[in-house]
Image (tube, rainbow, N blue to C red; front, top):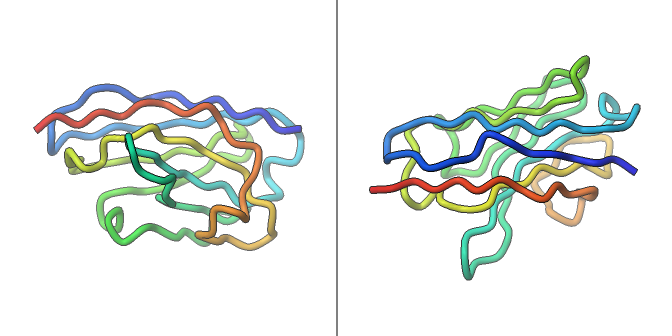
Length: 124
């Protein structure tokens, strides 16, 4: 069972940046894709970004393209989400998850072993 611990959230003004980190335990980190998701109050969980096991393929939600960058360091069993030009609508709890399939996907059911999340609040 993989355990995930997110960090890096906080309060930032609109236009600011944050870098989220997700450290995973377990020996199989480098085998599976990793994803970032978010859930705002009163809304359903939504896909943000995913990265393939090797890091060669990345996918983003349309709202994050050009602003967010997902990356991973398999030696450190860590996945990152660099978020720039943040907007108030980015406010949410951000969670990372391990992909269940060998290819990168945007589909939430294709992910498991969710972390507890880290709060991101963007003020206007």
